[in-house]
Structures are given as C-alpha cells and as structure tokens.
Length: 178
Image: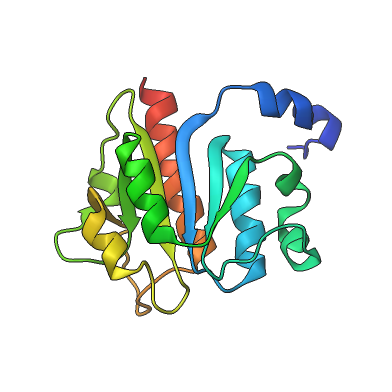
C-alpha cells in the first residue's frame, strides 16, 4: 500500500466547492465554548459537503486563529452564519421546512443506527454546549432526538466526534442508498 499525495487526492478548489451541490444539512452549534471544536466542525462540514454551519450564542466565529488551527482553511469554503439566539433561529428554520434534530441523550431518543432519513428532506442537526448540551427549549421544539449508541464508561463523546459520526451517518445514508 502507498499513501496518496495531496495531488493524487484530486480535491476541488474552493470556488468549485462553493458551486457544487451540498447535502441538505445544517449543523447548528448551540453555545459551544471551544474554538477548536468550532474549527473541527468547519472541517467536517467541508469534508462532507453539508449546506452550512450556524454558530449560535456564545459560539465563537471566524476569523480567529484558534478556530483556524483545526479548520485548516475550511472557514473559507463552508457557508456559515451567526445567530445570537438559537431558539429563535430554530423556530425560523422549522417554519422553512427543516426537520429539527437535537443530537442529545433524551427520553425516547432514536438510536443513530435506527434512524432512516426521509427523501427530499432538509435537516438541522443541533449540537449543544460541551457541558450542558442542547438547550431544553430546543429539545422541546425538535422533531426528533438522535443518540449515538455507546458501550463504555463515559457518558458522551466529544462534540466534534459526535458531529463526525452523526453527519457521516446521515450523509452516507442519503448518498449511498438513494
């Protein structure tokens, strides 16, 4: 086996990326404290070609060197927005037809492996604060609670690990089963 060079990967440039079709997924960060988590979210959003990232509340916004440490330039490619009030923003996009999914450990959550995306549906995946999770008022508005099955002693994954797992699962189910 031989590792591929960057040239052999044949990635598109930023302008081509911005014009290509995206998966109908918004990643919403609800009061995320760590700028490294914000940057990693951008990088995942770029790699998986999601519609946009929405930063809410205390979540830091680009440009910032601590975000760029992990984003590695993805902030220039991925569409993003800042919304001061996550609750109001979620109400707005719900009216626009987005299916609201709180990625959170809640009663009656759907296990990720059991989740089946619906055709022609736009999704808003909400990931919460590293300590407190998704605000309860947003959980109350959600169409679905989605939970990643876990088998160890810790009660949760790091937020960026959760984002990678959930977004990859959703994208793969949309892309490879359509």
